[in-house]
Each structure stands twice: as C-alpha cells, then as structure tokens.
Amino acid sequence: MIEHLNLDDRELVKEQFGHFEQRWTQLEDLVKRKIQVSVATLEELSLVHSKFQELMEWAEEQQPSISEALKQSPPADMAQSLLMDHLTVCSELEAKQLALKTLVKDADRVMTNLGLNERQQLQKALSDAQHHVDCLSDLVGQRRKHLNKALSEKTQFFMSVFQATNQIHQHEKKVTFPEHISLLPEDVNKQIRTCKSAQANLKTCQNEVTGLWAQGRDLMKDATEQEKNEVLGKLQELQNVYDTVLQKCNQRLLELEKNMVSRKYFKEDLDKACHWLKQADIVTFPEVNVMNSNRELYTQLAKYQQILEQSPEYENLLLALQRDGQEILPSLNDVDYSYLEEKLNMLPQQFNIVITLAKDKFYKVQEAIYARKEYASLIELTTKALSELEDQFISMDKAPAAVSAKEVVSLQQAYRDLLGELVGLGAAVDELNQKKEAFRSTGQPWQPDEILKLFTLYHKLKRQIEQKINLLEDTIEALQGWKGFNDKVTVLLTSFIAVYRVSLLNTTWYKI
Image 1 (cartoon, rainbow, N blue to C red):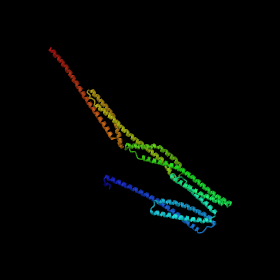
Image 2: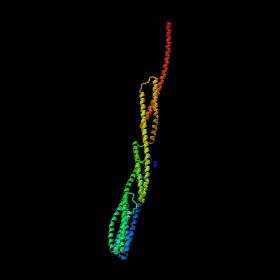
Image 3: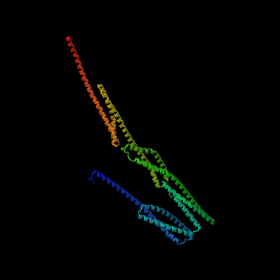
Image 4: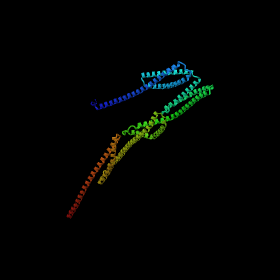
C-alpha cells in the first residue's frame, strides 16, 4: 500500500505504524509483568497454603493422643515424665502459634494480589488452621490441669522453674535472633522496638522469678539438706539465666540505639550524594548544542560550573561515605551487605563520569562562547576601521579640486595609501568570511545582517577608491598632454616673435 501513497501519507503511515508498534511493545511488557506478578503470587499462595496444611496436619496429629490422655488420670509415678512431655508439646504449640501469626501476616500480604475466589479459599484455610490450633490449645490447657493434680508441690515448683527458664530463653531468641543490624534506620528502629518489647517482657518475668524464690524458700523450710540444695540450685540457675538474658538485652538495645544514630546520618549523607549525582547526571547527559542562543549557552555554562564548584564538597562526602560504609559492612546481613557494597563501588565511578562530562562540556561551551565573542569583536573592530576609512574617503572627496599636476599626483598617492589600508583590512575580512562559514556549517548564529553590511561597505569602498585612483590617473595623463602641447605652442610663439622682430628691424632700416 505504501508504494501507492505520496510522501506525506507514507510518513503518516510510518508514524502511525511506529506508534502502534510502541503501544504493542508496551502492552507486551505490561502483560509479561502481570504474568510475573501472577506467577510470584501463585507461588506465595501455594507456599502459604502448604504451611497452613502442615500446621493443621500437626494439630490433627497431636489432638488424638491428648484427647485420649484426658479420659483417664495419669499415675502419680508417671506424672512427672508425662509433664515433661507435655511441656515439650507446649513449647511446640507456642512455636506453632508464632508461626501462625507470621502466616497470617503473609496471607494478608498475598491477599492484596488475589481474586475473590482465591481470597475466600485462603481465608477458609486460615480459619481452619486457627480453629485447629485453638482446639489443640484448649486440649493442652486441660491436659496440664490434669497433670498438675497428679504432681506434688515440689514437682510443680520444678516445672514452673523449667517453664520460666524456657520463657526467658524465648525472649532471648527474639533479641538475639537477627545477629546482624539492619542498614536502613527504619529497619533498625523495628529491631529496637522488638528489643524493648523483649526487655519489657523480661521485666514482667522478674515478678515470676521473685515469686518462685518465695515459693522455693517455703519449700526449703521442711526439706532435707539435699532437697534444699536442689531447690537452691534450680533457683540460682534461673536467676543466672534471667540476669544474663537481661544484660544481653540491655547491651543489644544500647548497640542498636547507637547504630540507629550512625545509620540515620549515613543514610542522609548517602541520599544527599545520590540525589546530587542524579541531578548532575541529568545536567551532563544531553549533548552540548552549539546552535543554542548565547543566553542558553551561558545557562549551560553556569550549570556545569556549579557542578565543578560543588565537586570537592561531594568528593569529600563520598570519601566519608566510603569510610563509614566500610565500618558498617561487617554488621550487615548478606542482602544489605551486597547492596551497600555495590553502592560504595558504584558511587565513585558515577562521580568520576559526571565530573569528566561536566569538565568536557564546560570547556566546549566556554570555547563556543569565546569563539562567538571573538567573532563579534572582530566584526565590530573591522566595521569600525572600515567606517573610519569611509569617513576619511568622504573628507578627501570633499577637498578643493587640484589645479596643478603635482597636486593631482599627491592626491592620487593619498588615495593609494587609503586603498593600501583598506587592502590591509582584507585579511580581517577573509578571516571573518571563514569564521562565518564555520558558524553557518555548525548552525551557530553568525549575524548575517552585520556581516552583509560589513562586506558591502568593504567592497563599495574598495570600488570607489579604485575608481577615484583611475580617474586621477586619467586627469594626470590629460594634464601631462596639455603641458606638452603648451610647451610646443610656447616655442613656436617665441620663434615667431623673434622672426617678427628681425623682420620689423629690417623694414625700419630700409625706410631709413
């Protein structure tokens, strides 16, 4: 079809076709991204479903044995071992409940990308899992009541100590689980909140530890020496665990708060450096357009100059970031470590590229401005010199007409001298012509009106002076011809007068 169209319609068809191709490419990219998001969402949905299923299966496996155990009271001699097993189940249940909370958060996050049916299925799975875990928790609580009835006061005390110790260790894990400190201040702030929460829970546990000490002292009143040592040993072990974990928590909190401040200032400096590099890259990315006006060139020059003037400050900032970043790296996890290491390696390279571009384009714009100034100055000086020669020519032309040949020769020589000065300006005119062609070929403003006026004045003045010199040359030749004729006439008249005098003398003598 294009072969049968005119040039404008061809361009229109090509333009429309290119537009549709671009829209098609954008649509393909959008569909690909949607597919990637859908695949990732389905993978996360499958993972969450499988975890819910595992959680329900575990709860279903635990329920029959606990339900069966509730049907009969445990023997007194087996109560202690059964209680230990039960505490293990309690620990597992607590871990599963924490896992369920995490799964709920994951499910809430995944639901934002799901359709109505998938969301309902996921909500049903979540509800079933919570129901199974809640039922198991109720059964575990009933089982514990049955076991407590079968245990002595001393055994209950030991179980309470074991449970308190286990609870303290759980708080310890919350504090020390993320061994590394996050890079971003907001993430460090989350770690601080977690640590403070664990610290508050530990202070709550102190009341339980104090109560166990009081209960232990009551047990030791009527106990044997061996039982006293056993109770005291358990209490001291509990107290040591509590003091150690509380000290770790306090130290961890101080470390996090200290790093929070350094991370905050580091992020501010990093964001400042990245923002400056981004703005500098925006300024230095476009090629220099020498066809721009002088005002635009001066604006570009000021931007490049500003970048170069600010470069020492940001170079020092990058050096400080490198120094601080190297100190931060060992405390980061693998993801943050890779991100920061890449940033620290990339920023100096970006800085060097931006500064190199800024220098090159600064000198290029500066050179273009100097060339324009030189061009304009040469036009002005040449025009001024030509105007002075024109004024001199006009004043010479207004002088009284010469009478003698000597005066005409002198006037001709004055015009020749004036022509010599004008020819001397010919080199400047030729240079201007070369610069004009160079400016025109690069699309720069070349002041056509001024150049045309200058060239016109030069050639007009040269032509007028040459005409004047030729006219004076003709005048000199005419005067020289008249002088020769005058000399001949003078000689003839002199001879005639002499002959006449002789003839007159002879006639007079004859008469006498």
